[in-house]
Image (cartoon, rainbow, N blue to C red):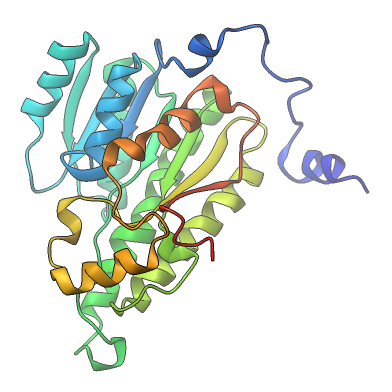
Length: 278
């Protein structure tokens, strides 16, 4: 049986044809008229993505938990002439995630792009030497379960609207084992995120696209705990010899959110300075 027949039988009929062609490249990459939601966007990669989306014309919902982001939302609105609003939400709470996503759709009148970006690093060292399971549970709750909660809540909205782009922030750590830091739980969670994206891409094929982005070492606050000696080891293993800037990363997110990527689903974009290439 052909693959498309299997999909039709299992998850419903697939679109008969693709989008209307003939747009200019500027039109394809524009996000004007779209509503985008980015979790973990009060700082770091998430903030850079939210700002890039606003620069591209999208209205943006910013998510935060501990660091208020209302002023940052106002900054986006004032600077780029888009609608922007901040939402406080702990992504490890499924009911709160669902409530927040539904509120975003109500406030903006639409929801076209969702970036499941929020997460935390593993800083506890060797897994077998860590006391108890609290650190493991925190990683799984925030870096994996939180992503699934977002997908579970936004999926019905995308299906209802007949379109959507769901983007997961994974990591090159989902492809390789980092050295010299030891972070088995984080690596496992990010590998699961990559495969979750691929799996959802198949499930959601009739109505939405799902992809992931795997950043390498990016200059953000999340890696401030790492000593310079460790970072020096990183640089020696990166073909480009340095950490990346957030601006060097956000193009992948803009592409996956835009109409330039309407034939891209189930893929993972590595932006890692070549770390995974050797």
